[in-house]
Amino acid sequence: MTDVAEALGRKVEEIRAWESGDGAPTYPQLEALAYRVYKRPIAIFFFPEPPAEEDPEHSFRTLPSVEIEDLGEVPMSQGKSAEKVVQEIRRKTRRQFSAEEKIRIVLEGLRGEESIAAL
Image (tube, rainbow, N blue to C red; front, top):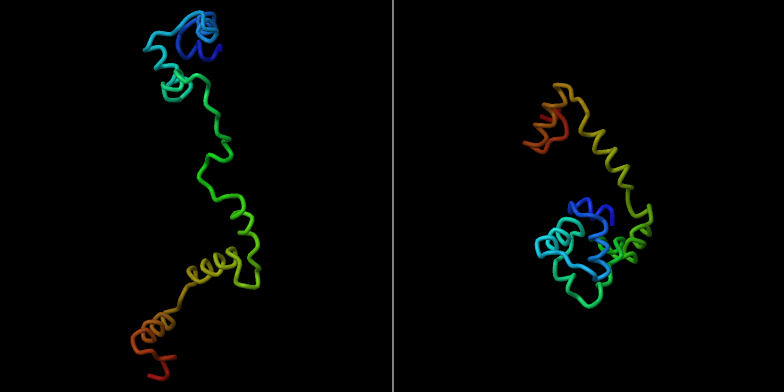
C-alpha cells in the first residue's frame, strides 16, 4: 500500500480506507490507480470479484510446451547442427581469394568451365 500511496501522492490511511470500503477515490484518482499504478482497465474496479490473473509463464507468445519438447527430438544424423552450419558459413565467407581464384570463379560462372586451363 505504501507504493500505491506514493505513486498517487496520497496517504497510506486513505488507500487503506479505499480498499476496506470506508472511502472511495475520485474518478481521476481511480483512473490513475487503474492505468498508472496497476496498469489495468478501469472497468476491473467495477467487477463484483477480481478476475483471475493469467499465469505469466503462459501469457507470453510461445509454442505450447508439447511442441517445445518435440523440437529437441530431431536426430543429429538427419543433418548438420546449427552450430556447424554457422561455422561453415563463417569459414566460407571469410576466405581470401587470390587474383587467379577470383578470375576462375568469374569465368566458371560465365561459361560453366571447371578450370582456366580448359579455356
